[in-house]
Image (tube, rainbow over all chains, first blue to last red; front, side, top):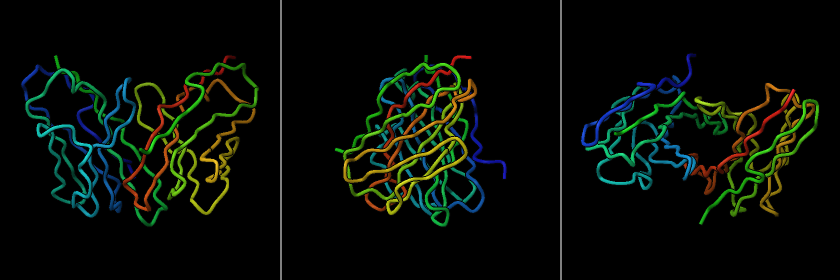
Length: 114
Length: 113
């Protein structure tokens, strides 16, 4: 398996623009997670899905953030409008209930909002 | 509030040394605890996962232990190598649900040749 695939790897945008980050989880995994990593706050869970259904979105910082999982092989994290404080590395991860909960991460999407 | 503390924040050792990284957490009702490695500009790679019912796990030169009563886990690295240089993060899963994973901020390890 190719692992968790994220795109884009790097995104530079201007404040106010819409940003869409994409994730393809490992085939067969039924959990998908979106994390954000910054130097100040470390890794923070934004939202996670189980069988394509959002389970906990309490980590989503504001209404400007939204996430969808239209099918088992694709998820998006959207920021609209983006702000400089959203600059961070956004990670997608997936796991399987059958696999003892081991978490597999993508390479991340580094977002810079100017 | 669930929290994970990793001490030290950074560690530099000469090649060949055995070392221990520490992780403490606030919740004894954990589902599992995982140790990850993160290389600069990369994602996290799972190293070891210890289920709540287990006390330790081993993989090659790595050994992780779990003491729920004291809220501590250690990652032992034997015969360290320059290739071990990375940031090591500890995370525990609380509440019996896969989604509730709380991360520490990591220990940045540098192994000097």
